[in-house]
Length: 76
Image (cartoon, rainbow, N blue to C red; front, side, top):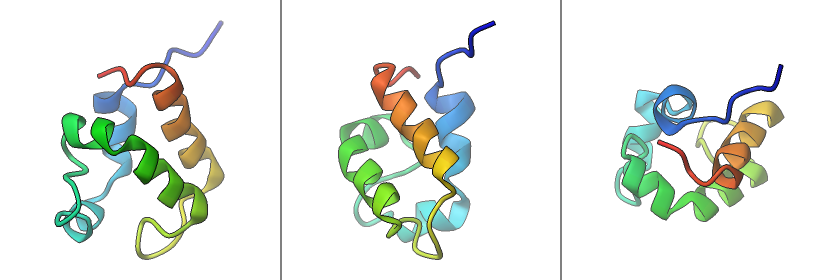
């Protein structure tokens, strides 16, 4: 059984907490599919470097999930 591709609404949007959305609101809206998709490379780089979210790096599996979403073509 293969794992289904990640979707923004089901898998990616819930990764961003209210405080993450608030902290990044001047740059982009992490609750918005359009904003996250338009800035996905920047967001992924920040996640991979551990500089986002601002209170500590995501575990590697979360960053991989974000990357898998990008590689799948940014499904909603």
